Length: 122
Image (tube, rainbow, N blue to C red):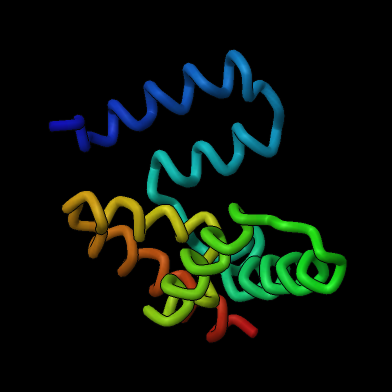
Protein backbone atom coordinates (compact mmCIF):
# COMPACT_ATOMS: atom_id res chain seq x y z
CA UNK A 1 0.00 0.00 0.00
CA UNK A 2 1.27 3.50 -0.76
CA UNK A 3 2.47 5.63 2.09
CA UNK A 4 -0.08 8.15 3.26
CA UNK A 5 2.02 10.06 5.75
CA UNK A 6 2.53 13.79 5.70
CA UNK A 7 6.31 13.37 5.83
CA UNK A 8 6.23 11.20 2.68
CA UNK A 9 4.10 13.83 0.90
CA UNK A 10 6.58 16.53 1.87
CA UNK A 11 9.51 14.43 0.65
CA UNK A 12 7.88 13.87 -2.73
CA UNK A 13 6.98 17.56 -3.04
CA UNK A 14 10.52 18.62 -2.14
CA UNK A 15 12.03 16.21 -4.66
CA UNK A 16 9.74 17.30 -7.49
CA UNK A 17 10.01 21.03 -6.78
CA UNK A 18 13.79 20.86 -6.70
CA UNK A 19 14.10 18.97 -10.00
CA UNK A 20 11.73 19.07 -12.97
CA UNK A 21 9.15 21.37 -11.33
CA UNK A 22 11.59 23.92 -9.90
CA UNK A 23 9.44 27.05 -10.17
CA UNK A 24 7.36 29.16 -7.82
CA UNK A 25 3.91 27.95 -8.88
CA UNK A 26 4.76 24.27 -8.33
CA UNK A 27 6.57 24.98 -5.08
CA UNK A 28 3.71 27.05 -3.69
CA UNK A 29 0.88 24.73 -4.65
CA UNK A 30 3.01 21.66 -4.03
CA UNK A 31 3.51 22.83 -0.48
CA UNK A 32 -0.22 23.56 -0.03
CA UNK A 33 -1.19 20.12 -1.31
CA UNK A 34 1.48 18.19 0.59
CA UNK A 35 0.67 20.00 3.85
CA UNK A 36 -3.08 19.94 3.17
CA UNK A 37 -3.18 23.71 3.67
CA UNK A 38 -6.17 24.83 1.61
CA UNK A 39 -7.20 27.98 3.42
CA UNK A 40 -8.52 30.77 1.20
CA UNK A 41 -6.26 33.53 0.02
CA UNK A 42 -4.84 32.03 -3.13
CA UNK A 43 -7.30 31.17 -5.90
CA UNK A 44 -10.77 29.95 -4.92
CA UNK A 45 -11.79 26.50 -6.11
CA UNK A 46 -15.02 27.91 -7.58
CA UNK A 47 -12.92 30.22 -9.79
CA UNK A 48 -10.81 27.27 -10.94
CA UNK A 49 -14.01 25.45 -11.85
CA UNK A 50 -15.18 28.47 -13.85
CA UNK A 51 -11.85 28.68 -15.70
CA UNK A 52 -11.77 24.97 -16.54
CA UNK A 53 -15.35 25.24 -17.84
CA UNK A 54 -14.34 28.20 -20.02
CA UNK A 55 -11.41 26.25 -21.44
CA UNK A 56 -13.65 23.27 -22.19
CA UNK A 57 -16.28 25.47 -23.84
CA UNK A 58 -13.72 27.33 -25.95
CA UNK A 59 -12.10 24.08 -27.02
CA UNK A 60 -15.47 22.59 -27.97
CA UNK A 61 -16.43 25.65 -30.04
CA UNK A 62 -13.04 25.49 -31.74
CA UNK A 63 -13.21 21.77 -32.42
CA UNK A 64 -10.14 21.11 -30.29
CA UNK A 65 -10.14 17.95 -28.16
CA UNK A 66 -8.98 18.49 -24.59
CA UNK A 67 -9.56 15.19 -22.79
CA UNK A 68 -7.64 16.22 -19.67
CA UNK A 69 -9.85 19.32 -19.33
CA UNK A 70 -12.86 17.02 -18.95
CA UNK A 71 -11.16 15.11 -16.16
CA UNK A 72 -10.14 18.34 -14.42
CA UNK A 73 -13.64 19.77 -14.77
CA UNK A 74 -15.15 16.64 -13.20
CA UNK A 75 -12.69 16.78 -10.27
CA UNK A 76 -13.31 20.49 -9.64
CA UNK A 77 -17.08 20.04 -9.99
CA UNK A 78 -17.07 17.15 -7.50
CA UNK A 79 -15.09 19.24 -4.99
CA UNK A 80 -17.44 22.17 -5.52
CA UNK A 81 -20.46 19.91 -5.00
CA UNK A 82 -18.97 18.90 -1.64
CA UNK A 83 -19.11 22.54 -0.52
CA UNK A 84 -15.44 23.37 -1.12
CA UNK A 85 -15.94 26.25 -3.55
CA UNK A 86 -14.53 28.96 -1.29
CA UNK A 87 -11.34 27.20 -0.22
CA UNK A 88 -8.14 27.39 -2.25
CA UNK A 89 -8.34 25.44 -5.49
CA UNK A 90 -5.50 23.23 -4.28
CA UNK A 91 -8.21 21.56 -2.15
CA UNK A 92 -9.18 19.54 -5.21
CA UNK A 93 -6.33 17.28 -4.04
CA UNK A 94 -8.40 16.34 -0.99
CA UNK A 95 -10.70 14.36 -3.27
CA UNK A 96 -7.78 12.30 -4.53
CA UNK A 97 -6.75 11.59 -0.96
CA UNK A 98 -10.32 10.66 -0.03
CA UNK A 99 -10.50 8.33 -3.04
CA UNK A 100 -7.45 6.49 -1.72
CA UNK A 101 -8.95 6.06 1.74
CA UNK A 102 -7.22 8.92 3.54
CA UNK A 103 -9.21 10.77 6.20
CA UNK A 104 -9.03 14.45 5.24
CA UNK A 105 -11.66 15.67 7.69
CA UNK A 106 -9.16 17.61 9.86
CA UNK A 107 -7.64 19.42 6.86
CA UNK A 108 -11.07 20.17 5.46
CA UNK A 109 -12.34 21.47 8.81
CA UNK A 110 -9.28 23.74 9.08
CA UNK A 111 -9.86 25.14 5.59
CA UNK A 112 -13.57 25.69 6.21
CA UNK A 113 -12.82 27.48 9.53
CA UNK A 114 -10.46 29.78 7.62
CA UNK A 115 -13.25 30.52 5.11
CA UNK A 116 -15.61 31.46 7.94
CA UNK A 117 -12.94 33.62 9.62
CA UNK A 118 -12.28 35.40 6.34
CA UNK A 119 -16.00 36.09 5.88
CA UNK A 120 -16.29 37.42 9.44
CA UNK A 121 -13.33 39.75 8.90
CA UNK A 122 -14.99 41.44 5.88
